[in-house]
Image (cartoon, rainbow over all chains, first blue to last red; front, side):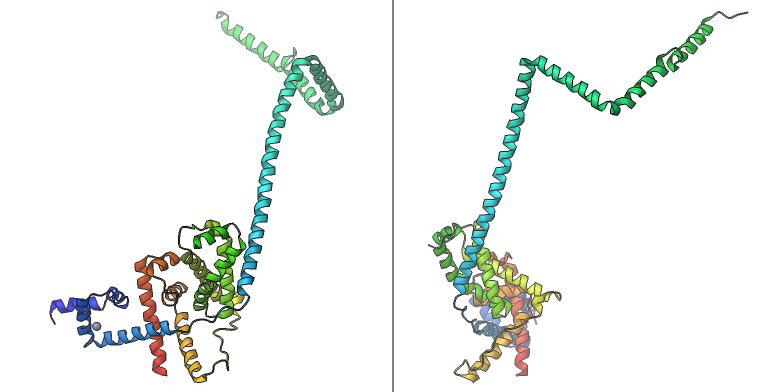
Length: 189
Length: 184
Ligand SMILES: [Zn+2]
C-alpha cells in the first residue's frame, strides 16, 4: 500500500469524514474515493450498514400521540393564574417600596423641620429655652441625685487627696522643693 | 405576525397566549415525549415549559426566533427531570407508569402494531443509553428537523460539538440497534 493510500484510509476512518458523509456534504470526487474504499473495507461496510440502519430507525420512529383534549385550556388557565400572581406580587412589592420611600422622605423632612423649629425657639424664646434647660437640670438633680452621688463623692475625695495641705500633690511638691533646695545649697565643708 | 402575538402575550392578552400555546404545544410535547419516554410525564413537562416560557416573556427578545428559545426551556426541563429520576431518593424514580403505553385492541392490524411497538421500544431503549443532552440533540435533529444553527440556539453548544455529539450518539444507537437486530 502506498503512503498516499494510507493517508487516504486514515482520513476515511476519521470522525470528521463520517460526520460529513452522514450530512451528505462530500464532493463527487470524494464520493468516488469513498465508494472505492467501501468496496473492500469490511470495517467501513459494517459501520456504514449500522449507521444507515440507525438513521432509518430514528427517522421511522413513530410520532408521539396527540395531546389530550383540554390540554390547551388547562395550560392557558395555568398561565393566566401565574400571570395574575406575578402581577399581585409586583403590586405588593411596588406598594411596599413606595411606602418605604415615602416614610423615609417624611422622616427626613420631619427632622429637618424639627431642627429649624428648635433654632427658631432658641432665637425667639431663648430665655424660655434656658429656663427650661435649667429646670430640666434641677429636676435631674432632684430625682437623680442618688445616681450621681458616688461620682460627686469620688470627685471630692480625689480633689482632697491631691490638693489639700496633707494631700499627695502637696506633699510631693514639698519633698521636691526641699530636695531641690538641698541640691542648690553650696557644698558644706 | 408571530411577533405581534408575542408582544400581546407579553402584555397578558389571553387570545395571544392561547394562540401561542396551540401553535407550539405539540412540538414541545414531541420533544418532551422523546426525551422522557413517558406520555404522562411528558404532558407535565410540556405544561411546565409553556407556563415558564409565557410567564417569563419579559426575559425573551421578541426579535429572535421563539421556537429555539421555547425548546431550550423544554429540553432543560426534561434534562432536570431525567437527572432527578436518576437520584435514588427522588420519588419520581418510583413510578414508571404509562411508559410507552401499549393499548391492546386499538389497532385494526395487530401484527403491524407489534412490529411498530417493537421498533419503538428498540429506539426508546437506545435513546435511554444516551446522556440527557445527547438525547435532546438526537430529538431535535431527527424529529423536530431543526437545522444545526437552531440546535445551537437550543443547546448552547457549538455546531462542531453538536455534529460530533450527534455522530457519537448515532454510533451508540447503531451499535445497540444492530445488537438487538442480531437477536431477532
Ligand atoms: Zn475503511
